[in-house]
Amino acid sequence: MTIKITAEQLSMRFKQRVLFHIPSLSIGPNDAIYLKGDNGVGKTTLLKILSGLIKPTTGVVTAPSDTWLQRLFSRTGRKGVIYLHQSPYLFDGSVYENVAYGQRFERDATKDKRAQVITALRMVGLETLADEHISVLSGGEKQRVAMARAWILKPSILLMDEPSASLDQESIERLVTMAKDLLERGASLVITSHQQNALTALCNKQWLIHAHQLTEYANNERTSSNVVVLKDKSHDVKLKLR
Figure 1 (cartoon, rainbow, N blue to C red):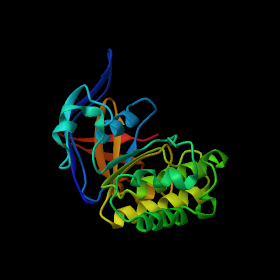
Figure 2 (cartoon, rainbow, N blue to C red):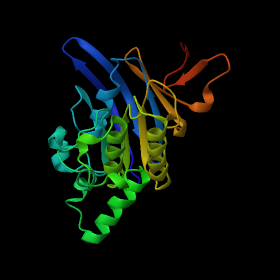
Figure 3 (tube, rainbow, N blue to C red):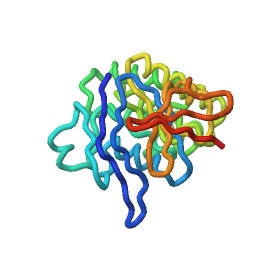
């Protein structure tokens, strides 16, 4: 359950536009990180790079679970790491079938798989909708289905891209329940959000992408004057938050 991902000299460029250059970063074990930054600075791109879904312009991402295939082909995903999209990708089927999809390669007995799906649905409050087609669900309910599908795979690292956007309070609380459970199991989380909420309150670190750089600081480094001391390897920078 517990792994560590590291990256060195990570950068992403689209034609002449540089999104970011990050000399080094690490996730895990058992981290909870709130990833912040203005629109367009590369938060989603960074999450996709860390999950192995896209290749950076420069740099290397290393995880203990990486295979030679992962090192050769960057878009094969990364074992034990799940990227949860802001607009969840769901399949044309029932709620139950969507949550159970990730189990298709698991070797557990059928009854054990079913028990895990029912447990996941209960945790997100959708057990009574198990046989309903995914199309009848609200946006918040669909996000809960996606979270249940991720939770059932017990990821070592869960990358959550704006998971609380447009969600009602009940849906956020259901996601918090599952996120807490993963943290208790030793997993790590990275959460992007434009506003603080019960999910970001779980985080013990913050990453900020600003001026093409990523800086890290602990939540308790925020001062009463709303000045945050951002720490990197070379120097301390004080940034006035808006």
